[in-house]
Length: 257
Image (tube, rainbow, N blue to C red; front, side):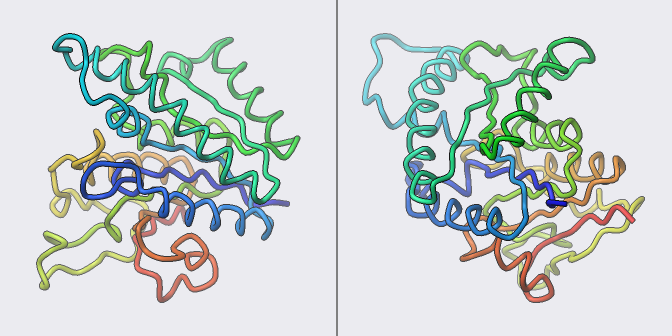
């Protein structure tokens, strides 16, 4: 039976320092996902980056936009570009991809929840890779996910994944500021362990989340019986190394048993 993995790629793992999409990094991650699929892993991809993509498409706008209007405009432009890039990159491996845009209300018990789960199930049964993101063009503040960490956790639970991998631009949870040489990477977190004292509250530079969000998602999903890994998406070959060389690959794992 295939090992089902939900992989969330954050905006900080997909963008360069200037805020533009890092297509080279995106291509490297696609290469690794293709490798996982070739090694009995069933992958669902939750990808950020649409707003960052769209923001770079327009040099000027006709009038000053508020934050909701900006998110709607840039995500509408960027989502088309992002899914197009994924389509081209995965096509090199003859992998079919399908786009799933969702909203928080779709995870309430009922028909929408069942329809979304059925859609993704039939995609996986037909060897189609689901690429999931929030439908920012119609979501407004009170209906939005906290970030894609929360979304990926809900997807992992909905689809009964074995593992959730949260990729950002940091190796995992540290005992202090990751830039401090005295800080130590926490490699393993047992169920019920409280790491609140170690969690940095700063938000990420490119996305809405941060380590606080990843920790909240990881503890919740761990309690649901799903293993969670926090790792650095900018580290070369990180997804493959997490499978082949977990002992020497920096990451934080939340074990479910």
